[in-house]
Image (cartoon, rainbow, N blue to C red):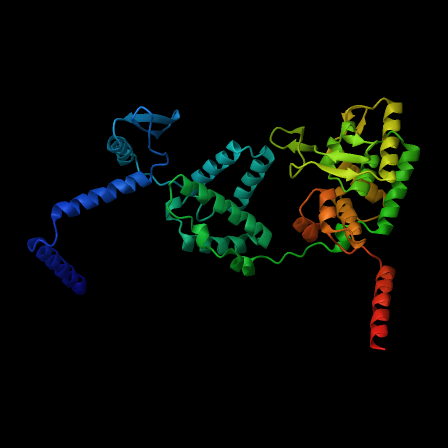
Amino acid sequence: METENLQYGKSTEILQFMIKSGMLNMDDVQNSMESMKRDEFLKKHQYKIWQGKDGKWYTYLPDDKKGRVKKKKSSKKEIENVVIEYYKNLKMEPIIFKERYNVWIQRQLDCGVSNNTINRYNCDYVRFFEDSTIEFMDISKIDDEILYCFLINRIRQKELSYRAAKTMFGMLNGIFQKAQKDKIIQVNPCESIDFPVLRKHCKVQIGKTAEERVVSDEQMKLLYDIIAQDHRNKPNYIPPYAIELASLTGMRVGELAGLIWGNVNFKEKYILVDRSEKYDREKKAYFIDTTKNAKPRFIPMSREIEALLKQVKKVETGYGYLCEYVFANENGRIHARVISDCMRNKCIQAGIQTKSIHALRRTLNSKMRCEGVSSIVASSILGHTEKVNNSNYTYDVSDNQYKINVMSNINREIMQAVK
């Protein structure tokens, strides 16, 4: 304490000496301080200040009822004074993290994000942030150090996989970016976090094996045998036809449910995929939207695909089901959930491990890749990127005999080369 008092005394003496000697002008110091204060208030202002064609100066101020109100003054200094006065009189109550999450969610809605995505964000909020150390913390007080400790503790407490932790970090980054844009905070603390370092704290997730994610030739045969029985005994039961088309085209289940006859071109031999069925969890209603990546694609029509679709049309015409949609019954369009349920039931009836429609999608892609089809062509047919194709859809589906033949050919070439 004595040392601090001594240092303070010396600083005061130096300041007094500088003032007396004329080295410091108090008016200049005071003006500089006032200028700094003005700048601090103006930095908080989230709206631009501009000069109109009439020569007047304009800006907006936040308003609880209207959202914002326009202000007009004769000079730039006058309009800045209006802004400064507003922020001076504003109650400086802490802006908590949860409030900023709600602001971020509203921005997602304004950008046209679907209700299903918003619902997922809200579920993730409960999982990641509810009852956490930062939920009711002033967002301006959350620096990179606090955030780093929060991330480690939350990952460990919730036993999050690296993928889940990335989702949490992505939400945090979005929330802080919005707060920074709104000038609530000056720095986004996420920018200082080296996130991959946190992988060592994540729960090791054991993924499914290739056998679990695709349908083997033996399983496919058993599945097709059950579907053939349905066609013989219940020809008007339409969902199995959709399963067949999925195995031949790799279409997503929503795309099967949204497929219309107008997009099936028997003359030019292709299927245009540009629609998909979605389900709004909030409204509890089905609707037709774009495909997952919102990009239309063309699937070439083989003889097998053509024969299947003509068979579907014949059956639906005979039973009076024929309508705009390819897969329909007495109640109209068949929903994606019905097709998915049918796939699971057929697997159970065939006595094989339960597979999804997506497993058929992975299987088709893997077979194309094993046959030498490039990732560019395969990803184009399936409607995703090459990166996704290589990472999530390509598996070794060749049998052991195929591998023996490959190894035999290579070994023969090696032996011939060394002779």
